[in-house]
Length: 54
Image 1 (cartoon, rainbow, N blue to C red):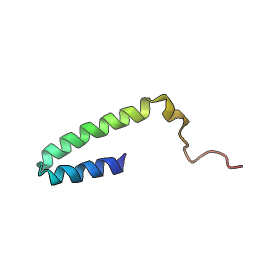
Image 2 (cartoon, rainbow, N blue to C red):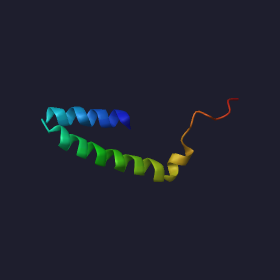
Image 3 (tube, rainbow, N blue to C red):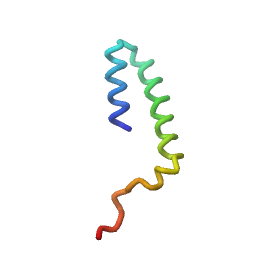
Image 4 (cartoon, helix red, strand yellow):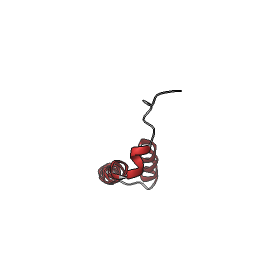
């Protein structure tokens, strides 16, 4: 998710958006992405790194 936000920020800079506008848009995008990640049923099945190793 962070890489996505960084990439979008770079694109917004390229589009010459003002910092305030970039921050507003990036914040909205980050909120949507976090909501999607935390509400998806499939997310519960993603590895956490804490699984037992065989």
